[in-house]
Length: 340
Image (cartoon, rainbow, N blue to C red; front, top):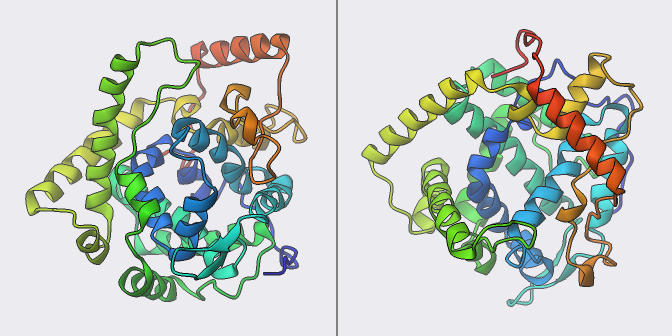
């Protein structure tokens, strides 16, 4: 479980990569239940989540703030390796033994890589279902980029397959032989999203909005699971469901042709493109999660949590004004290949 520096000559991903094009796209959020469940099905990872995570206590905030550094390993340029080391540090104290006595550690190379592999497959599945699909050449390119991306964590490269074809075999083997339906997975399937304290909305109305959204994500997850995983989870999927999902995906793809990049992309990705285009300084501060997404006060001292920096009232007002003018302004034409 020893750390290792990024391999010699390893460079961070840049704006010409397919990973930049897809990973920061908000459409990946449509597979939120899928990626959470498939990660937790890995026994060591599921055990760590069950023992150490507070996802069920504050699922919206937990996911929203975690996405910022995860995005950063792709979009932070020369600072990507530093962000990767930050994420690695969050996992150092996540260890223990599950209910069957099997020991786990979040920095076990196989466990850590599995989480990364699910993010890579998140790109593949989002692009295939909601962004018009991928060619075999693009899948191979994304595989090569995911290796380059993984080097930014400074982890052992031993678990990483050597090719796209080898990765497909790796994924199939994990799905058939190692994934299990554990408590952490069932928690994802039955998740309720409590209303955050900062949302000015009656709780019954909040529940009526989010209950069908989570249900829709469960349905999408059933569709994109590998058949063997779907069967193990006891999910029903018919040819009619597949047709409806494909039609829905095409509607999403067409609708997003009119969505500005400032809305389509995660804020960390938007800032990265602006740095690459020279619109903001290359050393501009990285975009962090809003302070109200911080973990509960009784958990903020724990090293496993990313704690967004606190901002003054003046900073918040300035950020709001900047965002408002950015969204209201005339957006320049996209460069070829940047948008899906």
